[in-house]
Every structure is written in structure tokens, then in C-alpha cells.
Length: 135
Image (tube, rainbow, N blue to C red):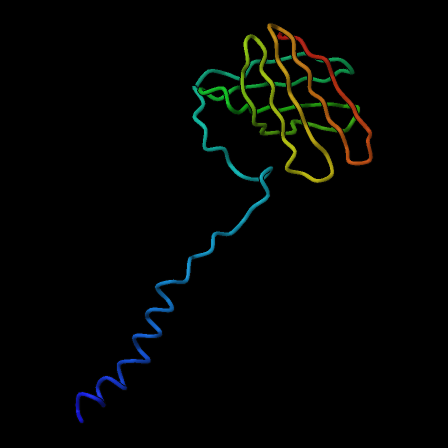
């Protein structure tokens, strides 16, 4: 009888512990444009570019060339030191990166040699780009 009583007391506790053990923890989600990169970057300075429409930017690729950090000042769209983290890679002598995490606008950065293009396309179809050259 004492064994049955102990078992009856222990059963709800075991059930509770089992339920807790099988519940997967949840990870808070963040907007991809706000997250910090996990790519490694060397200590070299970002490459400066002079662009059309009076825009200026710097770009720095990750060591594995899968991400680029762009910091852009684009007067025509009222940007001042706007940071953008883009994902992509290198194929041949061309690097192409995009960031489409924001449902309102997608960004693209393409580099080939000393030239670069920063392009934006809003969900209403409006597009804008600046053509850049390394300083």
C-alpha cells in the first residue's frame, strides 16, 4: 500500500518533469536588417567610393566574401552614414550582394574592379541607383 501511495504521489511530478523536458525553448526573432553579422572581417579599413548624385560610401567584404557592410551617404534619398549589411558572394571577378529583409525596400550592391553600383527598389516599383568608383 505504501508503494502505491508513493507511486501516486510521484506520477504527477514525473509527468510535469517530462512535459518540461520535451518543450523546446523558443528563440526571440529579430529583423534580419537589425541583426549583427556573424561573419569575420579583417582589420583593414573599408574601401571608400565616390558615387553619382553626390553620394559617398564605404564597403567592406567579409573574409569569406559572403557578406558586405556598406555605409552610405546618399543626399538624394536623405541618407547620412546609413549602414546596410548585405549577403551574397563572388563569382569570377564580380561581387553581388542583396538585402531584402525589409518588406518595403530591397538593396543590392555589385562590385567589379574599381566600380560599384548601389541599387534600391521599393515595393511600389520605384527604383534608384548610384554608380560608384573607388577613390
